[in-house]
Length: 96
Picture (tube, one colour):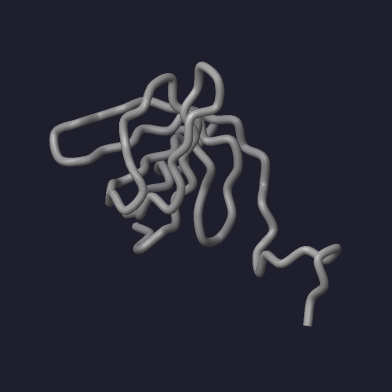
């Protein structure tokens, strides 16, 4: 059993700081992916656009034209204001 000082995450997070496009129906919102793991990502937006429980698609461009963007269907687990920014925590449902 893990105590409070040990990492509880099953997957390591990778700091990304890359543009990400969030799509929900006809709504498209650009944000910044701050970190990425095997099961989800943390996203920063300039305004409140989504709420916990929302489902959306994420598209994260790669730095190489040879690689397609990372795309996944996701569920918003956490949505919170942080000063002038809005932060989302999303969990991947399916990865394309």
